[in-house]
Length: 404
Image (cartoon, rainbow, N blue to C red):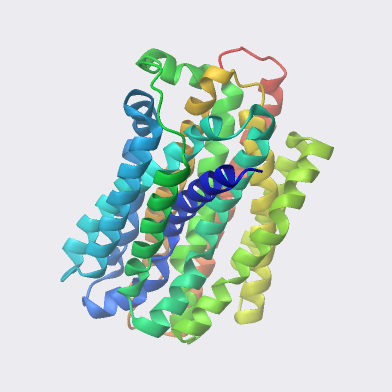
């Protein structure tokens, strides 16, 4: 591979990693933010929700805007906006300002996510497109998963402001690589109309895949929102220990991602989708009963393994047989469904946790554990709903409508 290609792929990979890392790195700091700003769980929760809502609001439009203004140009703008927002978050004087700057950071992240996928076709040959898409998918998953462990380390060493300031040098590096190595824009005109943008949603199999993606993302987000409270308040772990405990998920994701893709190719996406959901259901059930650190970690390993299998299989099913002109649209919709699920997990399942453990700042360890159990009982129900969609999609796929 040429040096220019390596530099371009490094810039795209780092952009995707940073955008995904921003989704979860702040979660581990929620207990500290609640204490520093003397705020309730519901108020500090907006540090996570503001970022996710901003991404969700603009990610599909960002892809279309890149076609009009130039994908390289827009990616550079998104990286600089993201970097500026990281600096502002790290210097914020109050919680309302932190939420506002996190919204700005989310807007930059939405552009980064949309443009990295859109730039693949401009960066590598058609024969290498699949593996690069897989690389970016892996970077997205790893970035989301490693946020708590990286955040826990930063929190223990330099405090909560480091959770955001760490993105400044990395954002500048990604922007420099993009400026140096990404191909100059050659605009091809206006993108698809509004009607064609949503046309793919007429396919019931696609709708099922997007719905499952949202439901499963909600369950995974619950581990990032509820997990820190259980580990810190329920088990009494220090920030460094909490970060290490939550690093188990990223390690499992890193080990199982590629084998999951190979199993999907060998055994087929329908079978592996249901297998992944079944393993996830077992993990959620165990988390609804877990007591102690070892039981929690073992349950998390099972849940994350099932998620890797599901993600590889579902993404393969969603992106299969897509017309070349619609690949960006389908990718945008897939990202949108994922972020809607993350928002739902942080808000709705976070609300379940808050209901089961109302005063999390002063709650006893057993009360926090009870909140964990109730929340993952609700998460198990979401996985069962996703499994019904998987069965329905198999039937819908047997009657293709050629709308994608």
